[in-house]
Image 1 (cartoon, rainbow, N blue to C red):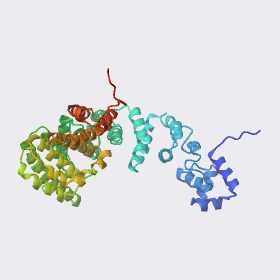
Image 2 (cartoon, one colour):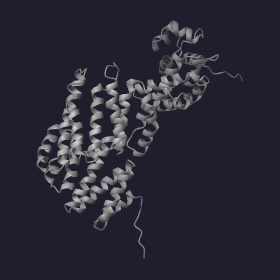
Image 3 (cartoon, rainbow, N blue to C red):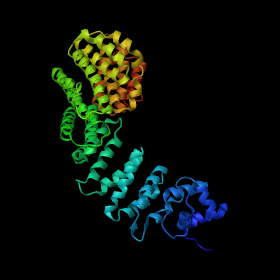
Image 4 (tube, one colour):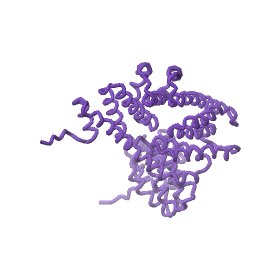
Length: 445
């Protein structure tokens, strides 16, 4: 029995015979130039692209990824590596799930350490196509392979991995911050502002106030350094400058330093002086005005100004934005707990919005706001002798904290529930035991 060595061309020619296509017909069906197709199949040149192979697969009725295991002969031969072939090949392998092909070809590429640039290029292609999860593997290879700790390629790979791995798991998010932090100032200028913003944003959700303050300060300072630089950013530079000021103000707010916080609010609420300001920049400036007004209300309420609560509620209603409303209600309910206000009328007014807060549960910052709202609302209910409601809110908060691995919040909720445990219903106790990982009550004789 004759053994045939499989090759890309042998397989394609076998399919042509099976389907009884000649070169002219195949060229018409695939849209590939007949001359190029003929040269590729006759081995005159290594000219077949991965897109052409995909076109052939479609005509022959084959699944995406057909013959990918043989395509490496188009990319690597006689110790030579073709970057124009390999980058799209790796991208397509990742897109169609041919991880076996990636496993086989990566070691061959990395026989020469300089070829790690091919892996990085494939990762960037995937990332920019919105295939972030598919890109993760390639960035990890870059991180493992590049030995120069000051390499921009290494820094960008760490930045991409940081953004890709962020989710609603607080523990994983903190590990991502720790891993990326040393590389933040080694990034090209076009990435640095967004990287600092993302770091501040994540640390804010984790209540790492000193880190938030540090990253926010760097945001403000970096904008001053880059003032005259023409650098491409995800958002207008005024956004990052304003967010730096906003986070510095929020850190002061969290520490109860309301008057000091107001100074930052006034700064980011008045950014018309910022230059240059195009249409997108003007929109950012207007958004900071809105946030500034809302946050001045917040600081007044937190300071104990009960008389401004209804005016604040009117402003939140006029914004009609769920994320602004949850932030406002946190301030209102928290202040009510501190100063003994009754805000039932405000909660009734926004009950329709409150019922929709669970849609935040897959969003990093908004989920944290939802959790904080439930905790303050539970305390408010207890203070107003509504124990059943308070226990329900505590259980809701406990579930959110457990799902996100926010252990400090989780234990706060446990402590709060235990304070009123003797007044919990059988159903509430069952939910509590499940949240704690206990299947049934143990009774000691």
